[in-house]
Length: 283
Length: 140
Ligand SMILES: Nc1ncnc2c1ncn2[C@@H]1O[C@H](COP(=O)(O)OP(=O)(O)O)[C@@H](O)[C@H]1O
Ligand SMILES: [Mg+2]
Image (cartoon, rainbow over all chains, first blue to last red; front, side, top):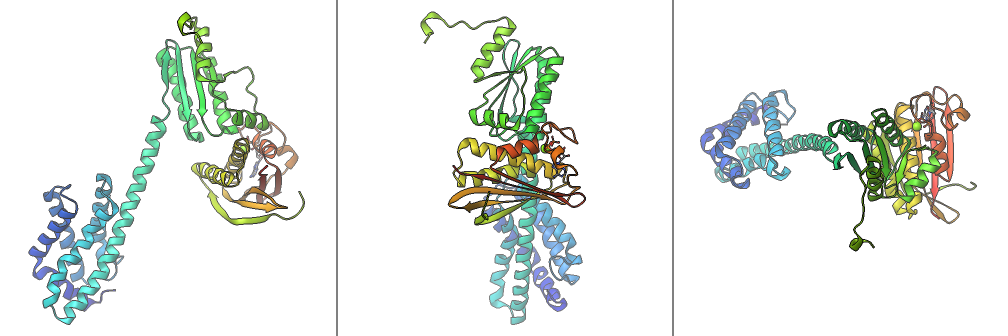
């Protein structure tokens, strides 16, 4: 905690030479960010923070979570969030706070012992603010990452038209119910959009199929049928096949093929087209 | 099925409170299965059983947790996992373990299927208090 007398002294220390100190701070941070941020923006950001800090100290603020520091915290949060979004590292983010300590240091040699005491308190306070910055930063990163995971959910399940009248969905990775649902909806929509009557669902890249994933699959296949389309499931690897059997899931009359190529051959046969190997290429 | 299970190298406990926790349970169990050197088929069976039980914990048990780790007994090593909730419990165990029976909208094959996928299966339940399902898969 910073006592009232200390915080008053600190406020005086910071504002006495205010213009120059803030300037040196901006310069130092700018260098550490290797000019990847516009100086104008940085200047605005840090001066605002500086003023808020001085103001809070003048009002006699205690620890980081003190009421009087709410403005400082809000600004720090905003800075951290911006840095996280702009792709700066946590270190580069925290340096915005820690650099102020370095800027204040030279003034210490000429300072009184009371000033040094005040500096040490401020130093501790800035450490806390540094940590606060890191927390805000990582929270934003987490938000960004989960947003990306959602986008990936969309992206990583492409429904592709592989032939006239044939679409395919290669499923890759862990299938949670949300993802299976997304894929299956996309598949049904793609049948309509491409006017296809054959769909291939390839599960070569899926490590496990549980009853919920199977149920999504089965429902989609039935829905596709109602739309006049046929689905073929390909790429059921031995360990998946054995697990499905042990679970007791029945695929009924659903067509399954070992590989995507087999499934395509089958699908083409159903659409009326056929694949004929040229004599010279036959192995 | 005799003798006591001896924990080997600690137990990991994970919450099962949200949909993506089920995925995390699968990853945890997969990692243990690899550590235990289960065959690919056995890994897949165990991971799938864990997926079923974790989802039941979430959907029917209203959330809970899993504790999983390696165990030994009589020189064999295996993976043990225990799924625990303090939900409504299962009033009729035989019915719940009947293939195709579901009180929800599932396939009704999770509980009975999971039992077939593992080597040991214990179900403890009390209406109004909760359910614990413990399974073990031994390395061959
Ligand atoms: N942890 C649990 N708590 C309460 N009831 C459960 C639990 N696990 C399973 N059940 C009951 O057993 C039934 C069968 O489960 P399961 O075989 O997994 O089928 P499904 O999940 O498709 O309903 C469930 O519908 C539910 O009524
Ligand atoms: Mg179930």
